[in-house]
Image (cartoon, rainbow over all chains, first blue to last red; front, side, top):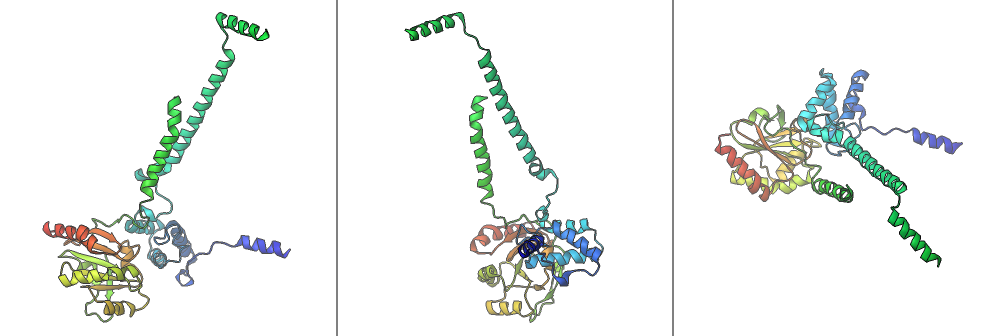
Length: 155
Length: 181
């Protein structure tokens, strides 16, 4: 029983956020918005973490900046746009949909279609070949030769 | 059709290999700067303790070509490039302004400059990354070339050495001075 409880407790643990108590805004609504924005922004130091997950100093300063701007009355999008204007689309963990990123968004779909097409062609060709094997008949000359060979075999 | 079928794996290999050949040689820490060709972002930093300048702001960056160097006493690579910055200063090649980034306390930056020499014309203290984020800085050292109009022309990531200076920075600075830019 103890082990089961322990296991459950371990599974129930959530990823630890790096947001420090002194950064958290008093207004829970604004703080919730800051968390939403923070999840979208990449930490420039440990590049596969969001600024909310990262302990890097720069991530901390970015979290504080996000909160300052939200308190000052910026919308979530305005905050994100400001950070993008400094660091480029790279800071967005969710890449935007635009001309430069079409390859990223459409690439996998095109590859899958290509794969399906290849498999389809492969099987269709095989089916045709199989069908042909069943249908083909021997010509008169071939039948005669086959009979002759079988005769020889008997002897 | 048949022949195409046998070429496919080779094609796939070449495409993937091509992407990897390019991708693996790229440095993920090197990000394109959003600010090249843009005016210097607005910032106003306090002076470092013990220096007689009155701080460093974007309005100081007009009238001549200059470098803006982001450094910190905690930054090992800054220590590496420091002698070369001193050399630039001693020869009067170009004024260098400093952004002292994320010092643990008010003494650390001035102490570091005292120990190793002070190559900067103006220095601002940036403990909260205010200017650093405005400049899109991701690490130190980073150096920006700013023209006479106060427009950022180039961002160099990493230490400046003889090679970077003669091959990249000096030609650019000469060019910017020549065109009155």
